[in-house]
Every structure is written in C-alpha cells, then in structure tokens.
Image 1: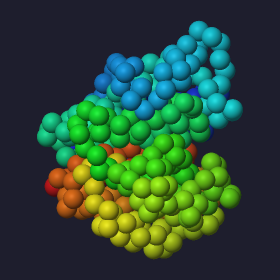
Image 2: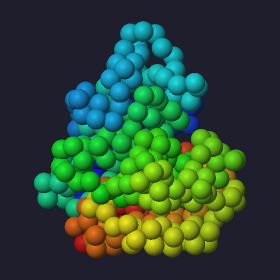
Image 3: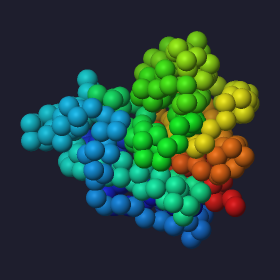
Amino acid sequence: MNLYVGEVLGRYGFLDGHPLGMDRQGAFFRETQARGLDKRAKVGAPTQPAARDAIERFHTRAFVDKVANAERDGLKLLDSGDTPVFPAVYATSATVVAAALDGLDTIMRGDALRTFQPIGGLHHAGRNHAAGFCVFNDLGVVIETLRRTYGVRRVAYIDIDVHHGDGVFYAFEDDPDLIFADIHQDGRSLYPGTGHAHETGKGAAAGTKLNLPLPAGAGDLEFFTAWRRVEAHFEQHPAEFYVFQCGADGLKGDPLASLEYSPAVHAHAARSLRRLADAQAHGRLMAFGGGGYSRPNLAAAWNNVVAELLVR
C-alpha cells in the first residue's frame, strides 16, 4: 500500500486559527509511526504540482486561472468565506492533485492495490468554484482521469465525511456509471445543506446515488445500520474501481459537527470496502482523508483505515 505523506502536502491548510490548519498531516503521521504502520507501507509524495491539463479534466479553465492568479491579484478568499487564499495556494493545491494522480497511476500500473492520502478528499469544490475549505477537487480529477486516461467507466464513490460530498455528487448527478453513496449529518443542521435522501440521481442515473443523512447525535449504531444499505447498494451496482472519502469529522468531539462516532466506524467501513473492491474491482481502492478537525480523532480514525488497507 502507498501512503502519501510529504512536506508540500502538509502545507495544505489555512492560517490564523482556521480549523483546517497545517498541522493535520503531522497529527496523523505521528500516530502512524507510533503504531508502526509506516514500516508496512511505501511512504512518500510528489513535490511538484499536477499539470494544468490534468486539473482541467474536472475543473474549468477559468477557475484554475483564478486560483493560479489569486495571490498576484490580491484575493483574500476563493469562495464566499470558508476558503481563504494561503501562501502558495495554487502550487500546494495542485500538488494534492498530483499525489492523487500518482496514487491512481500506481494502482493502474499494478504496483499497488490500495493507497491512502490523508491530505486530500477535497469533496466540496465544484467544477468552477472552491468551497468548504476545498480548492481543487482531487476526487473529481481522479474520477475523470479513470474515464479519460484508463478507460474505466464504472466507479464507486463512498463518502463518510460528516459533511455531504456535494462537489462530487452534483458533478456526477446524472452520470449512471458513478455509483455514489454518502453517509453524513443531516443537511438541515449542517453545511452544505445538501444530500437529502430523495437525491438519488437524475435521468439515466436515477437510483445509482444513495444519500443517507443522519440526525445530530447519531453514533456507531446508526452508522452501522446505514452501512448495510451502502453494502447492498454496491452489491446491486458493482464497480471497476473504488474511491473512499473517509473524513473523520463525524467522530464524537469534532468542533464543527454533531455526530458521535467512535474510530470503529472507520475500521468497519474500510474493511467492508476492501472486501467489495477485492470482489468487484481487482482490489483497486483509493482512500482520502477529507475533513476532521479534532487532531486525536483524525489520527485514530485514519490510522484505522490504513491498518485495514494494509491487510493482504
């Protein structure tokens, strides 16, 4: 398994006490080392940004231009308030995409079955905008690259971040080959206010999308009940490749949300997806950290994912 940790990736974050600070990778990786998991994985990451044409497989040229010129133009924010411009914002955000593409290439070459990228999973960014702490949507770039470069059409996308993965959902809402499942806190009480149970895909994609909102205060029992529906969804709609956004902000004590999971949720989901990917997709599975604003929580949850992905 390849584990994407590196100096440039660690700089993806915001200043002045922003919840998504630049200390998150370090918090994760210290726990990785304490558990000895780093000794069982190939650890490293690109230091150069992804090529613009790769980023533009998902994003519009105008939006990529906006990010590339943000510091020169003196922009303070890339959206309406959640996503500030930070030093080297373009190069750092594009390197997050580069890490995702490197992981994808490694799997498609057959050099690894699985990868994990703690600094990634930026699921709120849309094709033409930043949103919710997310500059470039590395997940969307991976999905588009699977189609355009590798000829893989049928992709499974699973999201357990406490916030709905709206940037991915709406970009592929009418795509019948993007099989989508998302367990999140009910959007009536949490950003971005989307992901209602009736949102199941449009047109030819109707029924290929599964949104499972949970009420504030829901914990492991409610998650495991919802997860049975996720498993049934992917058994009904098998895929050729699995993409997993495993945000840790649904754990009890996260400062930005109100679910009460334990880290057992992440172990369970990763174990289940590993088995589904083995059965359907030649084992091919990429996992991305996503959200999580309690450092002990993200360290515990994400390392549970790593431990499961290391199982042979």
